Amino acid sequence: MMLIPTPADIECAAARQGQSIGDVCKRAGVARSTFQRWKSGETSPTISVLTKLVKALGENNETPDPNSEAA
Image 1 (tube, rainbow, N blue to C red):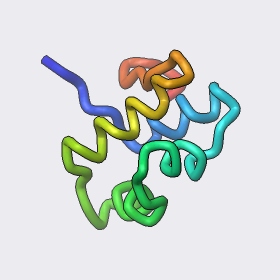
Image 2 (cartoon, rainbow, N blue to C red; image 1 turned 135 degrees about the vertical axis):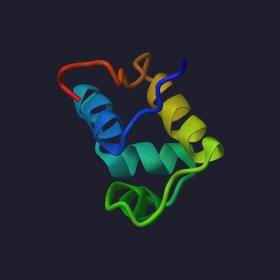
Image 3 (cartoon, one colour; image 1 turned 90 degrees about the horizontal axis):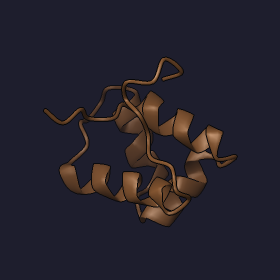
């Protein structure tokens, strides 16, 4: 079973890399407002958006760990 990262997982991974969520969104080609709407519960991300965000984080050799206690 694949665990889907939450907005907090994405933000924590970005912070561990010394990046802002804006930096990650920009590299992923995802509007920051899209991330913010997901974070606030207004929308749910598509698989495409999740994939882009995780890949953008992976470009720095770290992906979000939804099982991490820091998340």
